[in-house]
Length: 285
Ligand SMILES: Cc1cc2nc3c(=O)[nH]c(=O)nc-3n(C[C@H](O)[C@H](O)[C@H](O)COP(=O)(O)OP(=O)(O)OC[C@H]3O[C@@H](n4cnc5c(N)ncnc54)[C@H](O)[C@@H]3O)c2cc1C
Image (cartoon, rainbow, N blue to C red; front, top):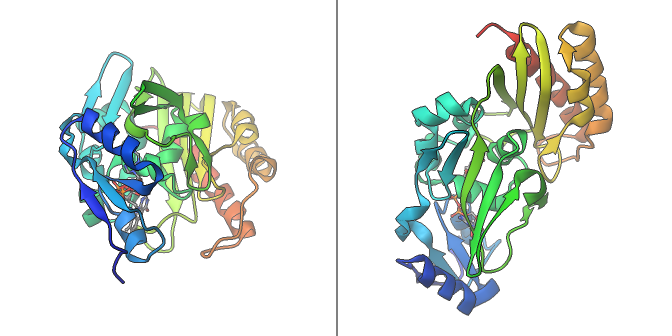
């Protein structure tokens, strides 16, 4: 299918961008990598009157590291995040997750900010942001605000972004002393959206875990922090505490049936992932 007719603008400055968004309001859609937007337009699931292409705004691309924080510009391509040595060394969770994001061709154009703005419930990146307790930088004509990832994702494809605003960057804490990350997901084919996935971080000393954060995706409208399961894992890891944490997922998670699998299967997969990921966290690395 072909998209409905649309107009196209490519602003060269942020001022021009916000002028266009103010002029066109809800009729405008931001075009970043186009990997999700163009597909929905071609299927006539969305029909914006005007596309505002942000690819001319070079200030939105790039990865930078300060003392305790790593920042990724919204327009940074998935492939550049995947190959970044800074990301691999400072925020291994994101490095571990990137190969699971779609396929190489899509990662060449798709952007980190596009995934954060789209907020697909089965996407890896929102769950990493929640697990890391990162922040989403949002900019509008009135200025910049930073929103914790834990409150930014509001529901199915629903975020804290308001009309006239865009995601300009994300900021995540760099790996602390003794902190480790682990990631896994279950899909029918590599590159598909996950049936269930888990991003995890913890402070690790031998086989003891502290500050455990388990962020599930593909099991609800937003990433879900499994608080009770995380609490059950604080201390020395053994089979019985893994089993207690798996049981705690019964109250932490309330999965939905989707086109790919039933709620009961998702809950089962979440428990399988917990076991795998926790054993990776305490494995000698
Ligand atoms: C076959 C296929 C498989 C895929 N599998 C996965 C997967 O397994 N995991 C995964 O995470 N993703 C997957 N994707 C999606 C891919 O990662 C996209 O790149 C991503 O969802 C959106 O990024 P984009 O830059 O292409 O955004 P676009 O398609 O350009 O935009 C997506 C939406 O976000 C808005 N938007 C984009 N950037 C901004 C911004 N900076 N501020 C405000 N709004 C913005 C747009 O207006 C639009 O509504 C898949 C895509 C395809 C086609």
